Amino acid sequence: MVVMSIYLLQESIVPVRKEPSHKAEQIDEILFGYRFKIIEIFKNWLQISTIDYPYEGWIPAEVRYEEENGTKRTFVISEVAKIRNGNTELLVPMGSLVDERSLIEGKLLLSNENISVIKLAMQLLSAPYRCGGKTIFGIDCSGLIQLVFSIGKRWLPRDAHQQAKEGEAVFFIQEAQPGDVAFFANEEGEITHTGLIISSNQILHASGQTRIDRWDQEGIIHAEKKIYTHRLKVIKRFL
Image 1 (cartoon, rainbow, N blue to C red):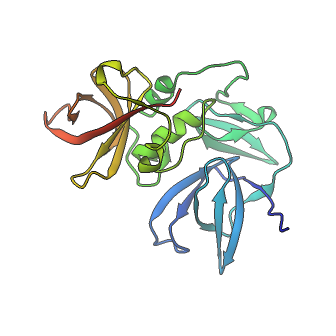
Image 2: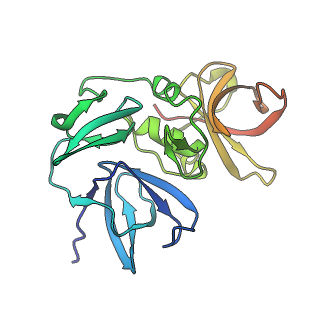
C-alpha cells in the first residue's frame, strides 16, 4: 500500500491552476496551513489534491510547504493576520490555518467561539471578483461560500454546482433564514452562481465584487440597475 504524505502550505496564498502553466485558468486558491497531497510532479509543477475538500489542480513546485506534524491549528477570522513563520513574519488572509503561538497581529477563532457566517462574509464586502479567488484580495461566488462555512462550521466543496448537492433543501422562500445559501442557474438549468442569504430580501454574493443585492423567488435584483441578474434554482441550509 502506498502512503502519500500530507503537506501544509507555508505560503500566504497560492493560486491553483487547471493545467501546469501560469497561463492556465485559475480554479482555486490554497491558503496558509491548508492540507494537500502531491499526486504528480511535472516539470516545475505539482499536481495536488486538497484534503479538507477534495479538489485537484496544479501549483508551482517552488512553493514552500512542510509535512504535517500534528500541531493544533486554528482559523484566522480577521481579514488578514500577521504571523511568525520560522525566522520571518508573514501576512495571511482570513481562513488560513495557523498555530496560535505564531500569531503577532490579528484575530483567531477561539475553541469555544461560534462565529456567524454572515459576520465573516460582511468582512469581505467590496472585495474584487477573481475567478478561483478566496480572499479579501479577490474572490468568486463559490469561494466566498466555501470560505465562510469552512471557518468553524463545515468544509463545503469548491464549486457552486457541487455545493448545491450538499445540505438540506429549503422548499419555500418564506422558510429561508439568514445563513442559508441560494443557488442560481443559467438558461440551461445549470447552477453557475451562489450567494449567502442575509435577510428575507437581501443576499450577499460575489459578482463584479462582493456586494449586497435584493432577492426574491425569481432571483437576484441588481441594486443599482433594478434588473434580474441571476435566476433562483434552489436554497440549501448547511448549519
